[in-house]
Amino acid sequence: MQRRRQMGNPKPVRSEVWLIDFGIAAKVRPALVVSESYGDEDRALIAVVPHTTSIRGSQYEIQICVPFLKRKGVFLLQGFVTVPPPYFVKKLGMLSESQMKLIEMGLRDWLCL
Image 1 (cartoon, rainbow, N blue to C red):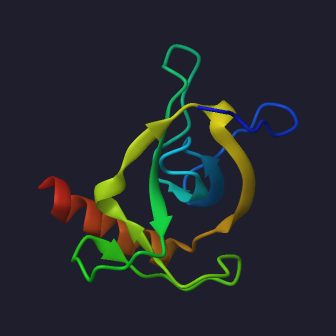
Image 2 (cartoon, rainbow, N blue to C red):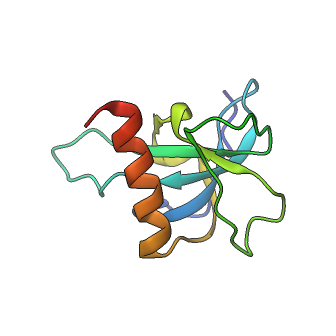
């Protein structure tokens, strides 16, 4: 996986949308940070939900329109993955609290929490 490094060490926080380098197969795409920040004793991994323009109509696809995402798409809850900070390329924007609630409810449903 080729990494595109941002200047300095990125510190993504919950509800931010970032461009992330997912490697050759998944390419660079937007993803939403859904985890809390990690501490010194934790592994440096950040949980994200990718944004995709390949819409299938699944109940686990959440469409949220924001001006910083130029193409129509959905946040794919089933694509939930952890990523280390060096793969975060650029911060695009942030979701509101009400938009995050939609993501949280969808994740709870999918993971049966």
